[in-house]
Length: 96
Image (cartoon, rainbow, N blue to C red):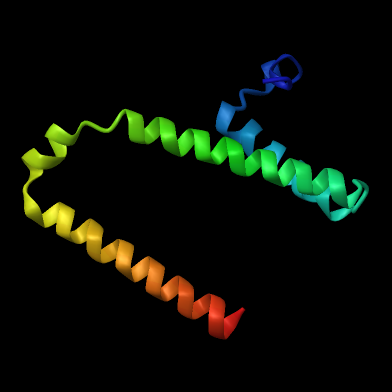
């Protein structure tokens, strides 16, 4: 990361630097310096990167291992999926 040379003598682990980046970017976003069109472009790019990351996780999924676990974990995953979709729709419709 970019701060490693600066923070080399402070014994800060990489996760702390990542946390610092998040806090700095949240503060920068709160200043409303960026034009709205640029901010929307950054958000679209962020969604694209998240999609690529999720695809990469899916590509590494080994369905033979999943089948070897049995029906209970697959059933639990299905129940959790339905719960998230239904609860998310309720929150989006009635709370937000």
